[in-house]
Length: 318
Image: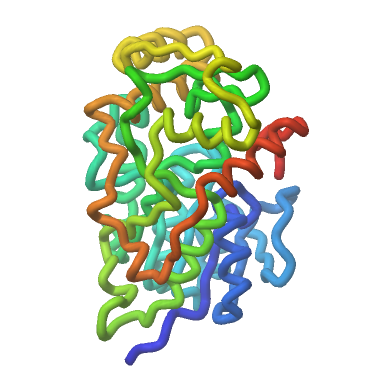
């Protein structure tokens, strides 16, 4: 049986998804983990990680940093120019990296529309960046991040914990898969702990494809029930509004013109609850192959509720 990959490089090791990836890798004690960062970056990198500074405008610096790496994860922030992704990918290919996980985290590239009505062609273009080099790519499809989406309220999963308000698309019974940050990290680490090839499961099975994982399947109603159990409340204590997903989606698009910070998530999440959202992928799940055990929705929700009640905003460094 082939061995698992050992040398893993991560761009964005201190970010919302890169940090769980990095911490979970370190826990396995199976890999040499290298964080590639810009010079002067203030991102906090988990202890135990080798840090190498790179210059996105210098292919030579990126190639040098990536020599000997077997797997590269790219998790660039939204403010980083789009062309940087292609530069990194081409440098990785020239450095001999065997696999690349492009900056496509959460979405299902096989299930989303092309182009996606909100995300556009960005995630398709990033996969194409890798395909153009001939290096295999792997995407981890996790759905929306549960803690983030629940904590941020009305324009995300639609539940404002502190104000006790809920906005349901339609009646709040549309399902979709969602993952906690810890599940994302665990799934990633377990994926990279697989032998590179040989008997199933192996890393090679996911070449140029998605690995599908989740924590649980939720509906807005199911999440509100969980929040209510955590807060000891009932519907009588909440202001609940129902509106068609299509209307909320269109309202979000309109709001994007004047307030993109609110309009974007409103349109994105409303679309995800619609009949065309394509956000449930239960039949494709690889949880069992990766040895992922079921998570407790109420236990996770309770932690989110407590943090939000104490003023937590996941958009701020966590």
